[in-house]
Each structure stands twice: as structure tokens, then as C-alpha cells.
Length: 222
Image (cartoon, rainbow, N blue to C red; front, side, top):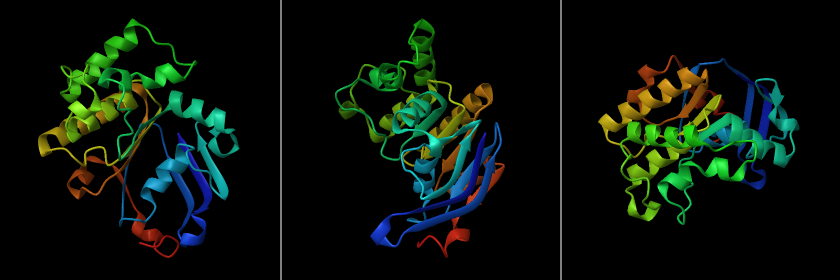
């Protein structure tokens, strides 16, 4: 599903540098990413999603090399193949929760919105505990509810790769379990891989693989 080779990235004058010689993630794999703040965990997700471009190296998702794509190709690829739960949720205030979840369909011609998709929005929202709040705007939702909207948006396209940046960070223990169950259930149904950045070490036993960014301390300042 995902293969990274000789990846190098830096933020220029800040001194931040990320270097990953190799990382392979298979279909249906579940990989938790941990490490100190500022170590590059979110940067890695942004590189995989094509939001950032590396200085060198390869990032292959399936048979596609993200690095070789144009900006337009990356946007379409991200919308159709990748589900990204952003740490800051990235919701649009002027849209309802339902419209935020459906946003990938509104901006990507390759995604076709139909009755099945609309039903899927309701099913995902019900599973996340926000099924009765889809017509509310983000400012009328709690932080935890906004986070669940972002999770539904990431899953609605049935992506082949799910990137999660602290998807359970603002949730109570019961909700964390529910959301993680949903992520794993949806990834299994779609044959998708999950890369999840988390500071919650209590969740790590749920993941077959854990990548500790502490191993990159020489190249990535904490």
C-alpha cells in the first residue's frame, strides 16, 4: 500500500530535517506513530498525503508515486484514495456537519455523490454518535463532535489509506474506543491501511505495529 524510500525533507532555516531511509506499510496494516512533539510525525503524514513535497526520495501509494504527481493530481489522488483526519479538524465554518463530511464529493469531479453516499454519511455519523447533529454548523458543536465530523469526512470516500493525526485526542475513553473500532472496521472493509499519529500510549496495544520517531532524533530535533 505505502512504500517510502530515502525520504528527506527540511523546513529550511529552522534546522528541522526529517530523514526516513525506508518504511513499508501493507494493505490492511495498522501502524501507530509515536514520538516527542516536533519530531516530524505530522510532517510525515503531510508528505504521504502530498500536502508537502520532499527534497528527495520516493513515496509510493499502490502503483502511484506521489512525488512525481502535479499539484492537481495530488489533490485528486488525496480526495479519492486517502482519508485524512487533521489534528485541527479543518472544518469549514459556513458548512453544516453533513456538508463538511460530503465536501470531498463537492470539490472532486471523480467522486460521484448519490443516494448510497448520502446514506453512508448517516451511517458513519450514527456510528460516531453525531447522527442527530448533521445539520449543525461547527460553531454549534463541541470540540469532540467536530473531531467526529472530521473522522466521518475521512472515511466517507472509502479510502485505501487512512491518515489519522490525533484522531482520538479530544475524546473520552469510551469515545476513543468507539472511534478506533470504527477506523479499524472501515479500514478492514475497504482493505485500507491506517497510519495513526498518537500521544495516547494506552491505545498502542490496539496496533500491530508502532513506529517510534525517537529513532530519528539525530535527524529530527525534538
